[in-house]
Length: 439
Ligand code: 5AD
Ligand code: SF4
Image (cartoon, rainbow, N blue to C red):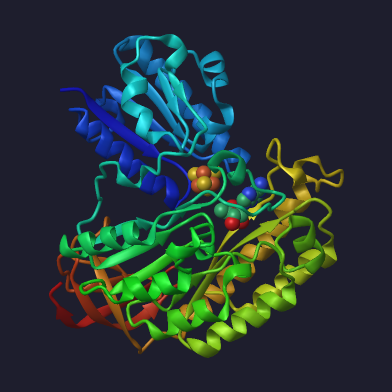
């Protein structure tokens, strides 16, 4: 039996696509190898959001080439966003790659692999097949992704995603809910609703099948057995009152939101084409905290966007401070071919970008430490993900607020416990179990 190994880069969308890739390769009669070294088929599910992602992948491809020199039967497959952005040039620049599929064509994987026609080694574009129905392999029996939509209709000037993942398409609500019920029946207690712009879900559905994101949240909440609902990634422009109310009123929806700010400067936000300004963003944060006082908020911030002045950056620090996020992913702006902002004249020098990143990271850490420290003495519901990697006596899991928790005594993965928080860092909460509820 041939054995595969999938290496995943990038976002949740890719993690979910990798489950499908594994499911498809298993359906094609292959098994999973415990590591890349032991595999006969290497799959790289790629990301192209920043230049660093591209560089890392090229390194992996060169390592794979060296292996192929001693093992000519090794097959190398490239999937995902970088594949879509590079298309057939992959086979010119990396001739040792055997097959490539874009994120909209995962369903064509088997066919591409089996093709003897060298011109048919790549499948790109055409997002018509809603790969949601492909076989999937779940990593954990109690957690699942639930895809609501794919693609993105926003035009953020820095972002390459719309060009590699196409326009937004919502899945039929009946299909989504049937999958949600099947997952619950299969023992899933936590679902992550997925979409590139998840909270604009439903706008493209025909009028007689219309379902808004808020309605979808309530419908999933009503399914027996599902006790935790999260979603990724929402756009601030679509976080309307009905969504906030649905979050606050649905017991299964977690008290957690990842709300990408990108910049705190209204001038920069305009050039990014984010369609909100700093004031509207802070107003939204205020309404979220009012409806859900214990909500934990995380965000994405880009520093060094073209034309960003020191004053603009100060605005980002101010808005971050005022929003008091629990954590953030921080990024140095990276120009992407074909995006609007890559053509802007006023690119920021690298040293300025790095210096701003350092200052921002310091602020992020300060808030993270403070927000976590405020939880000492509280009781948090934690869903166990099993023993921690470094110490099998200690268990790790996630709170409803999506914070990493480390606790004793250890309980099996999938068990929910009440944990008393005893100490915290900017990254984790530590505590002991007060009581355990079998899943
Ligand atoms: N440069 C830097 N960061 C970017 N992101 C998206 N495009 C770029 C880019 N060109 C960041 C945004 C987004 C996250 C997934 O990646 O913050 O929310
Ligand atoms: Fe990377 Fe964006 Fe593709 Fe996700 S959608 S894998 S972040 S390029």
